[in-house]
Length: 96
Image 1 (cartoon, rainbow, N blue to C red):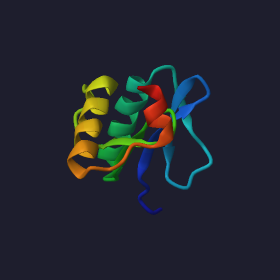
Image 2: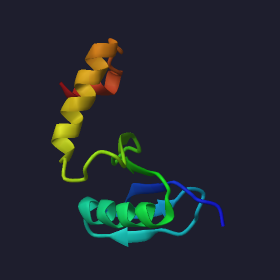
Image 3: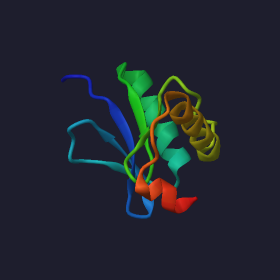
């Protein structure tokens, strides 16, 4: 069996852990529960972990501690975007 990256993804009103390319998912009530489970799977199988936001964007790889909350991650992403001078999308501009 080949090693697959584990993904934490939004799943209806809940969160799921899916192995890359898999049709099956394990569903959790909270994002943190899904992250914790995915970290354990990734550690046991020697695979990577990617955490996605509700819109599918990737927030951080597995080497960043799961205790970081989404607000801190958003601030870090904004700072990286500013540093790279990436123009905001229309959707991002409309939220301001």
